[in-house]
Length: 264
Ligand SMILES: NC(=O)c1ccc[n+]([C@@H]2O[C@H](COP(=O)([O-])OP(=O)(O)OC[C@H]3O[C@@H](n4cnc5c(N)ncnc54)[C@H](OP(=O)(O)O)[C@@H]3O)[C@@H](O)[C@H]2O)c1
Image (cartoon, rainbow, N blue to C red; front, top):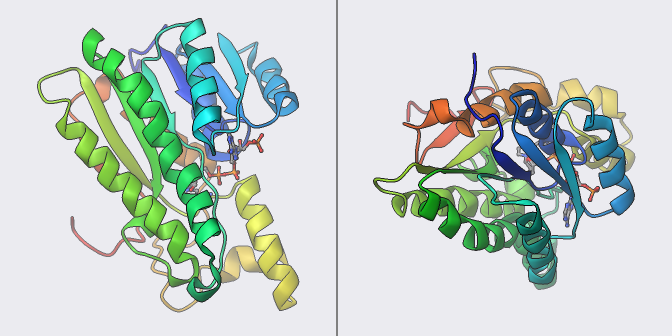
């Protein structure tokens, strides 16, 4: 299927690995021009080099956990061209008991997971509205509607992204711009491997055992019964970024492996 996004300029935050990298790959395969972002110039260079053979790719190293970093990313992206597609993918997750999460940890996580998307959307969406076409997708999580008590601070950031996407979509009425969020399933990525490694070390088990045991635990309602692959997530996100998804706006789109036990 042609998704009709050839030549569109897409910015995918946090795209040197994991879900972001898979989204960037599939956007490139669809003929979009893609800006890769991560904190380290070295990793950005490696990925842009790797993608040269697929399509038109640019790399911008910027730490978008701060407004200054996000401003740098915005300015450098503007120097390339007008961004038509923004995927607010960057995010950090960890298990930490609510009573141990400090104020500064709350703020840091909120800045990275939520404010990075606020800063970039505030900078890029007005132009999308002016040109009457644009796509913004927030990479949220099933944890945003089914808050996980072991990672409540993270879950709250994901709920906020869902609310943000819906509220922003209200501002697009009658235009060709859409804003959606994706409720992503537990997905096998570098970040998850690091995250499970930390838990495994503290509980005398292995990452491989946790990979399957995770889905057998009480209260885990996954119908998929395994980690999703990054490609399974990227397929949905790239569709949301496409011309073909023009009637999907303000949606909290599930790709959650059936975790959320409700009809709507
Ligand atoms: N994996 C899951 O199970 C899962 C489930 C639901 C939702 N999600 C969401 O999906 C998104 C991606 O998750 P993932 O598992 O793919 O993560 P990941 O494997 O940890 O990758 C994170 C990416 O973000 C970049 N990054 C991290 N901090 C950054 C910063 N301050 N500024 C710029 N780039 C930064 C990293 O690149 P550098 O290290 O090169 O900076 C890397 O490319 C997150 O929003 C997450 O909440 C994931």
